[in-house]
Length: 268
Image 1 (cartoon, rainbow, N blue to C red):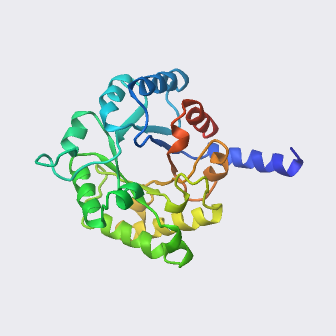
Image 2: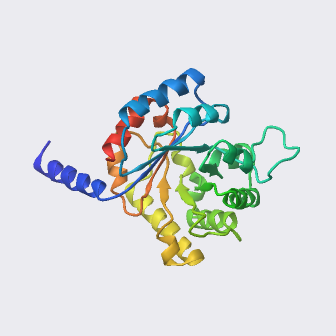
Image 3: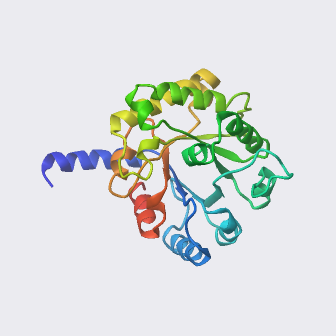
């Protein structure tokens, strides 16, 4: 390592240590019961004591109760990957906010691009889910992101503005009902392509400006904006020093406990 790289690495490490991050693992439709048990068991052994950062696991719904049991008396939180807006009813295959609370979930991912693109969820549906989650004291992780076509046509800001404004329409944000935003450029999710630092800084700054428009600077400053999009141990430190990044929503790299623990370690 040459002197310039050493100085850069040292400066970056100091920046990382000065910040607090949310490190969230979205396992999507992966893992069986044994794999969930082994992952959490290893995570608990290595991640002990109160840390500066926050860790959240989003296991598949069938294993949420297992996560609830295994994560007792730890500083690790967990939540659902999706949620319905009704408390109960004839909605086969869905999970209500009341059920989430019954399972001790503190968080729910809402509006992930895979829900939008594969299951055709629109901003109106996402808005209903946001308001239902908040009403039950569940913290929504609202996902925003543009596809490559929108980026190439310079429509990415318009897309993000629409998703945020329509997703949060008439939602009651208060000290009791927090929210987390996750910016995930669709073209970077699972592709191995990470947005450039200047692109991430621009979009996170833009999202912060929109939050200020909606809620004022005092409330907006307390709303974390996570980055997601091919985050891994190799790029986490470079991403962590980008301005306005409050943490990470991690997909593929969260499936192997070794990789996930490395990310946690590099952010401590």
